[in-house]
Image (cartoon, rainbow, N blue to C red; front, side, top):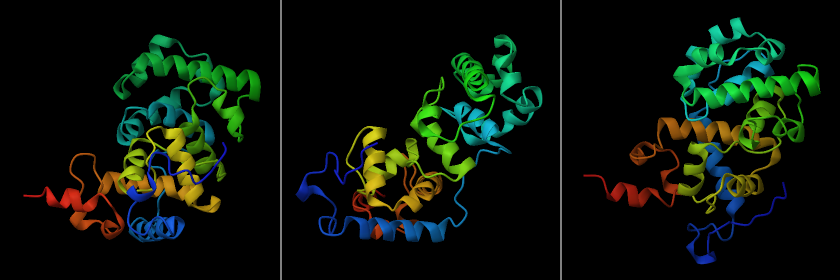
Length: 236
């Protein structure tokens, strides 16, 4: 991915105060504060190896991590590796993952993805972005989760619904697509921070900066957030 400080969709004068001169400095201060608030920012998806994390991340689409974590222990006992999952009977797999939602599509993707792992990678999860996104059901978000959390490789920034929302609210990006938001975040933070940026923003989105009712009065970066005044003004 080509990275540039594009500030996609943000006109020069519409950027948050002080942002026109020192966007990276402000972004760094936001990350530093949030890291103090969430010192152990890692994925909440429980896993023991890259295969388990890949499966769990695919299941987490439109589903909470808590729900996925309630399903995966039994799932991994039944299908301990890609070879076993590639041979799964669709109806049985659908039953096992039904509570995660979109279970038919997820079952198809999991079986196809596992078959591709067996055919192309001897059943092992690759540690290269291009190879991961070539797998059925795997996009950049899933690939970034696996590379960052399972291999410690910073290939990009995870952009889920929380990161998408917070990047816009915090004035870190004015883009509307995950790809352009990721590019903006990659340009604002050093590569060594890319893995932590996604994990930290996700935790902050869950704990404080909720979609409908953000807790701006408790937020450690409220004074750096261009959206906070508006939300605070709406409080009764």
